[in-house]
Image (tube, rainbow, N blue to C red; front, top):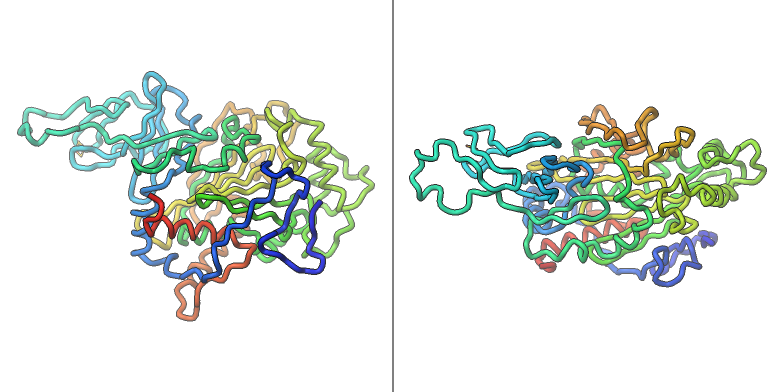
Length: 460
Ligand code: FES
Ligand SMILES: [Fe+2]
């Protein structure tokens, strides 16, 4: 049962609750409100180079960062590169199968060793003067060693190792030796996302694009649905952008539970089965022409249909709550990743800071799905996967490098892309007093508060 806005009163401590019957302590249960205050967000944090430097020292160098998929380095010698700010990390599968992460920097004069994003190597060789390392990072070759005075080569010449750990089929890295273990850092996430089995999903889309805005300007846009009725109004016939369950957790983690196949209260027609709802019915195997009910019945009909087709929903379909079968559960993995989770798969967004310009960022969009081998099964359109994409897992799509002008991340995300530079530009205005956040945007306030705790040295 969903409590509708009716008399338009909103109790911020209570919020909207999508399932009043969810048992206390269950994944779907409403979390207790965390009060992050009411202060305005200062604009400087979105463009000031000094703030960017504070973030580098206090945030990026201290937190666990999602680097890449374990499945992309499946065989000995496979590697992937992960760049964050001014750092570059090399993650390699060793000859005996173990994973190592190390700084991607030559110990001779500092050249970056590996330029490719992915590949396979039997040794790491510097492209400048050909020093070389084994793939576990131990030094293997110093060119013309006899021409060095011995003192110069004192100390370790191995590549410095970086902490790493895995969750959900991802390798995470952390540049800080004192950070708590990944498991502790992730808080509720492993339990909350267990049913989706991210580790069993395959990559079916992978796009990297630079956007002209601070990484937080972009992250903010994906942590609220307040803008949907203007920027994405075409989705209102099947997306309730208003009654959402916003939950805040420790460590900057948050979520919003968003009803799909449910008409927005801002949309005019709540009765007829509009073409979007009809499309969702069709994708769930229900003939819309034979559906003799109303718009308000569609969501439940799809939930029932999906429950009867567990083979479409991955290996743990039984573990999903009724709402999870239709809805989009968006989680924020602090500091810079969001998952839009559907039973069929996940849209994963990562927001990386530009190495030098606080007004640019690198936006990574990937889509993961549970493999589909039956050609008669169609992936729902909301997964944003192009027709003709291999869904069996036989082919891992190449990473596409797109430009802001060329788009390439899909129509809805590109609508956000057209908005963020305008926000970035406005931040500089002397006439802007700072961001005033509604409770619909409480997740934005929540992670900014966590960033401040890092920058103020309150974490570790
Ligand atoms: S900088 Fe790498 S061998 Fe010289
Ligand atoms: Fe958006």
